[in-house]
Structure formats: structure tokens, C-alpha cells
Image: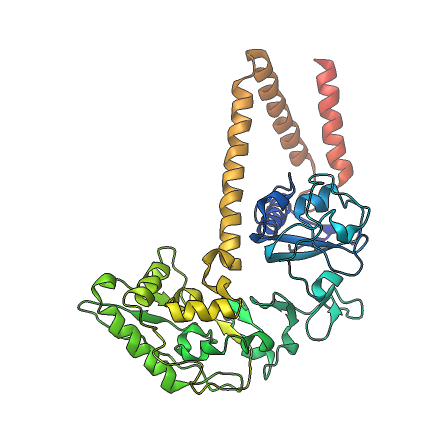
Length: 417
């Protein structure tokens, strides 16, 4: 939020700037919390696909437990709590054996331990390969960090093993052009991604891979990225995948459909299409034995295009491979941060509509006298505020004392009535 300085050197903001900042902060909180109001512990919901998680260093300094939003607010108020953003397949630990004598106020009857939960050094307040805290007390300016969509650790841009930070796909305004990032260590687990066309990987300018049938029949267009030291290259395998995709597109079950990778689309039908392509005849769209295929053995970080998950093969062989590697979540659209934030925005809109409806119902249920008092109060405030604005120097900032005087004048006016 931009702010000017008044004659006394204090920051000043306009009313519109202030209201916009409040709305931005509320939206940011809703995106992080996924629309969770924090009313009840999420333990009863089991291992949730994705939820906001916190670590209480007061209760578990070992960093081996995580708590939900409600427990953070109700059970750990005043404690040293770390916000970890979101974690997948996690169940609230609050009050279990890791908390010793401490009991959860919201859901006290819990298992001794949540065996499926996964923890990393983030729960101790440490991040990246440098194992430093965030914010880092030794830095005057905090560096931007990027989260790996697999291990869910956060990395400084200069520590993700790229030649330079300029290789991170961004537009001219510095906004990311990628949907997901996979760190160097995790890229070794999913080396099979190098067998897919390069268009699933984001570059400086977002690539588009399209498959269509009919008059404008086109093949999967593989737009090669600029020569970069960090790129993954396997042209032979990529060509094989393209040919298989085009061949499968001629199958009756997927005719007259189209999917786009690397381009956001609200009406994108790529998920159902990819499912049809992969399972229409039981043929793997990779078309090669990825275990025996020549894959670049050097692991490198990956920046992946929007909707890249929709293109992943879903044949029985690949499904078994995902299961063995414990990465089946990559096929789940609800696992992605983009989908998580999309659902959060939808919940926020529904909440605002519900709140507006509740306020209207409250007003409509009032008697005539109460309604008139509220309307007269609003009119009095508008008149007083308009009078104040007309009497002050427009070049001067409105201070707290000015606001207090407005309400004092309203009180005096009410007493005289």
C-alpha cells in the first residue's frame, strides 16, 4: 500500500487505500487458511488433502507436530507459533502424545500419534538447503522463497541450483509464469517427466501445447525453451509421446476434444481428456519403458506449466509407478495450491454473500422505530462527515484527533435531541 508523509513525517493513507489494504489482508488470510473459519478442530476430518498447518514451538520445540487453524487460535493463543502455510495429507496433532500433558480444548479424544503425518525442518522454523529461519534475523531484506510442490519445503531463489535467478519463468512484471516448482532433490523422484514434451515445463514465455481433431487437426506443438543450463532435454522420448498423443486422439472416445497446457482456462476440459487418452485403450501415452529409457541422470529443478498435471498418463502401468513412488497426489487436482486457492476464493465469496444477507435480514426484522433510528443515525453521520470535510484544509491529513472529534460532535448532537 502506497503511503505519503504529512508535515510531521508520519505516514498518511487515503480512505480508499486503507479499505483496499484491509480487503487485501483479508483475502490473503483466506487464501492461506483455505476459507477455514477456525471454528472447530479438523481432526475429525481425518487426513485432509490440504489444509493450513501451524507448528507450536512452545509445546513441541522438537518440531515434530502440527496443529490446525482452530487449535492455533483456541489452544495455543500466546504461544510461539509458526505459520507453515499448507500441508497435504495431514491430521491435526494438537493434544496427542507429542504434547505430553497438554490437552486439546476442542477435540481431546485423539489417537496417540498420527502415523501418516509427514514432518520436515519447516516445523522447527527452518527452510531451504541452507537450513535458515524465515524471516532471517541476519538479513536486512528478506529474500523471496519458492515452495516445492512435492516435499513442500521452501527455497531461496539463489539456492535452487539454477544458473541465475533470471532463469525463473516470470513475466515482464515479475509475476510467475509457472504453476508448480519441483526442487532438485524431488526431481530425481519424477525423472519420468523428462519423457513428456517440453511444453509441460514453463519458460520465460509460457508455452502452449495443443491437441485438436477435425479440420484444424494439429499435433502436440513442442515449443523448445531457450538454451538454458538448467533445462531437461530428451527429444527422442518427447517425440514418441507426441506421436502417441496424436494417435490416441483419433480414438472415438476422445474425438472433438482439445486440451491446452501452459495456459489457464476456466473452461479447460484437459483433466477429463487426459483420463480418456490414457485409459481409452490401456496404452501408455509415454510409449516407452521409462525405466529403461535414456533419461538425463543429473537432477535439476523443474518449473511446470499451468495444468501440467492434467497431461500425466493414467494407464495402469503409470498409476502403479505413481503408487510405488508415493506421488499419486500429483494426479489429484485438489492437491494443487492453485485449486486450493480457487476453492478458498469461492468460500470467501459465499461467506460475504451470506454476511450481506444476514445483515439485510437483521434490518428487515427490526420494527419501524428501530429502522428509522438506524437510518437517521447513518444520515447524521454523513452530514457530520460532509461538514467536517468542508471545513478542513484538503492538503492536510486527517488525524485520529479529527476522527474522535467527529464522533464527539455526533454524541453532543444526540444529547440535544
